[in-house]
Amino acid sequence: MRKRSIAVLSIIALAVTGITGYAVYNSNRVVPAEVRTREIEKGDITATLLSSGKITSENSKSYFGSNLLVKEVYVKVGDRVEAGTPLVAFDTTDLETAVKQAEIQKSSASLQRASAADATATARKTKSTMESQLSAAKAALAASERAVEEAKKNLVNTELVDTIIEEIKTTGVPADTVPAVTDPALSEEDVKLLNSENFKIIIQEIIKQNELSTVISSLSQALAQVPAVSDSQVKLLDNSIRAADLALTTARNRLVSAKGVLTAEFPGIITYVGAVEGSYATVQTAAVTVKDDRTVYVAVELVQNDALKVSPGMPAKITYGGKEYSGSLSYLNPAATSTQSPLTGVSVSSGEPTLGAKVKVDSPQGMIIDFSADVEITLDERTDVVSVPVEAVIFKKGGITTVFTVENGIATEREFEAGLSSVSAVEVLSGLEAGAMVVLNPPEGLASGEAVNVK
Image (tube, rainbow, N blue to C red):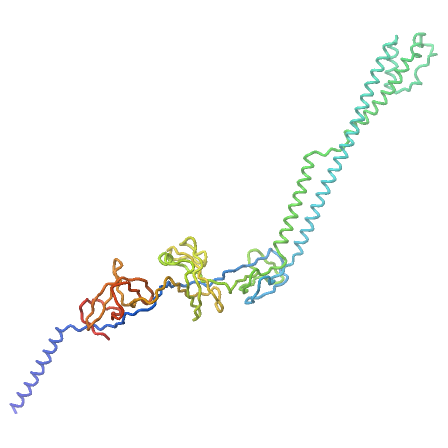
């Protein structure tokens, strides 16, 4: 019995010794890293730039009223319209009335100006005639006075003559009331003087002078009463005509610009209707908005590194609603902005300058404007080239690229010259050959010459 116990204990001791030895052996043995590999192949490679943006109409316009009463609204949101389709009709009665009133005001101003011109011409003609008559009367008076003086030179008793002249001038006594030559108070010489031809001439001229003085006085008074129109008054009336003409032009322009009926300028879809029949459409609120959903683009914002890679004309693929659309990069903004995009109108919160770009969609049927879409711009393409999966490439400083190749269970790090890169592969210009197996996502710490276990 004792011998059997000893034998059992010996077997257990040998087993423990074996297990311990195996553990020590395994602890000193390096376990190969498990890796996944893929074969380097030849094929096509395409470099793309991924972005996203808002689906935007190339042609979009909001139509506004001019504080006019909406008479009728012809469309509703969702309606498709063609160029020339009526959208909203306005009541332009007030504008038409304003034009008529302005026409009347201009006509009245013109009539006042014409009347003033006629009055001025008549007054000037009348004044000219009176001035000529006055000048002739004054000339006749002067001639009469000279005739009297000349006749007085041949008379002896000029004192008597002067007395009679003064009386005639004062009282206007006619010639036949001159003292008779038979008056006993007169001397023989006085009678002779009164009967002389010179005295008769003097009496006739004095009476004529009285008449001429009356004429001159009347003409002078009449001249003073002739209405005068100054140049400033005429200019004032001219200004009235110009003001009335300006008011008429303004009223007509407003009638034309207001347009009794708003019509679509291009084909599209109605995306907004703010006009309400019976209310006034103002310049602050759009009456109708039309967007062309047949000519659209995706507005994207590119950071500097991406913007430097692209140029107009590059083909693009647009993904929206699970469907792919073809297109191309059609426009780049001339300047970057770090505040607000001129294409999308959204603020750039990061503060990093971005460049707005348009990716035109060739056939946008099914797209909804103002929704977002993903964009893949094709930067370059290579056909039938050697490439390695991008998850196998190790990118190091200085632009160095390497991969781990596997042959006979040994991993070897190899440097190669990279060419075009895509989201899935990198072109090999030199340093690697098709058919070699490369490690995908090399584990950290993997060293060249190390054994690996390929899954």
